[in-house]
Length: 270
DNA sequence: CTAGAGTCCTGCCCGC
DNA sequence: TGCGGGCAGGACTCTA
Image (cartoon, rainbow, N blue to C red):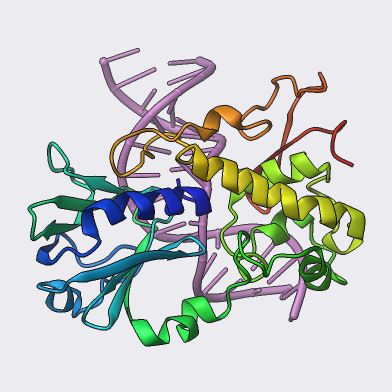
């Protein structure tokens, strides 16, 4: 489910229930997701106060007054359920707040993860240290991409999914940003012109910004934590639209790159 | 270093 | 209605 806009939407939704709240109870329903839960997770979080929430790339951050931050990644199928009406077999971690709110981290495929990281050391934490710039921050520039792509023969589609080059993009928004900027997904990254990169950067920022404003893209199981559906999926121009007509009239194509589906228009993307 | 394939896991949808 | 195959928003590990 979750690329940057969905994680951002999730974090904003969680903040309404967690910001400033004390965590009264922590329940773990299994020992691991992709990795084991931190052994001291329950002990550290129980009784802690949430001092703020944040996001880095596709990771959500729950800062606590224990000087530890709970870092969660939603993988492919992760989501938070707020005040669930009934328990679900994939609710793996459940938080109850001092005000009585119940928040469940639900992840059917269990590709997600939860870590506990000293808040002061977040930037140097292993998983964060190697991440590329935030696409909505100052660090993503045509020059940055030009340097990162220099000499690379891999298709630009695949390099944009590399979190060490840009942090937070996933399959949907890469397809959409390449379409918006008129770049073929199979073009060797090192051969994409400066002019095209100068179109790509704002295309990435626009598509992410528009999606966040729409509450993210709801597919299958994703909903915002409050249960509302994000409606950006209705704005996809190529993703998931194989065989449909592009705005130019040509059919949207699908091909597999690096094991992932790419959707694109042969006529609009050169 | 780079590139490509395989792996983790469950659920849903489609065709037979 | 049941069953098998393919596919899914991610990221890691292994091999060449």
